[in-house]
Image (tube, rainbow, N blue to C red; front, side, top):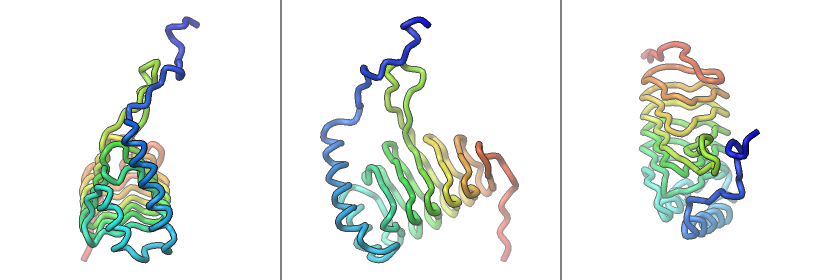
Length: 186
């Protein structure tokens, strides 16, 4: 195999600044010491205050469970009554926006970054994840970078979503595929 075709991770350069790394370290300590000790959604107003203190744009009615992991709060936006359930991993190197009345269920992984697999240096790349209003992300789902979950859409439990989902659609599987349209009854 030609040396041109080899990946050389010794040449990898972290594109995130030292300042960013220090902010993330400080954030991790603050969340671990001042938010995680509270059970589940208890002390929610306090947790929202901590998030806002680090640049998050969260509505006062948003709900964030104590076990949630948020990589960069300054890249998080949550609308009214939006919820990040227990053990959600919000890897928001890129912006993550969660619309009003949307729920991201337990153990979901929101991954707004990856690496450039076309490059020998494997650089970090990122794109936003947008979860529009009234959407529901089922337990243990994976949502990849650059994905928009349309208004009212449902992502089934353990689905892996790599492409945007149309509004009021239900998807599931790995990779996620259209199952049917979502219809609300009175």
